[in-house]
Length: 71
Image 1 (cartoon, rainbow, N blue to C red):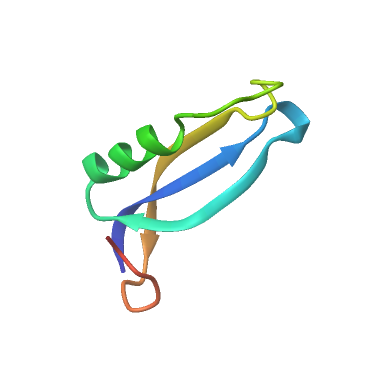
Image 2 (spheres, rainbow, N blue to C red):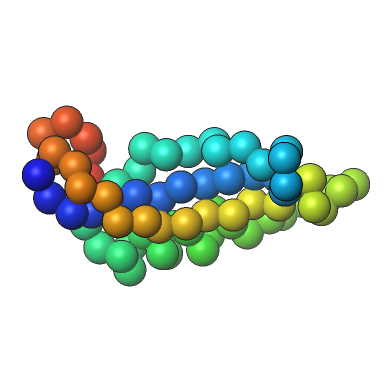
């Protein structure tokens, strides 16, 4: 078991917020934050920007490296 950083990605706001990714594990907080920053950027035409809000967090997690892929 080792400590890694899990990237959580949500789309939407309030009660409409949906977890869309919880399976990306990183050895480095810097790598995790890099992807969190880029995944939370929004591009293109939006009729309701709040509905399309993307949020990404890196949280520490204790995992078995033989059971998950670690980047």
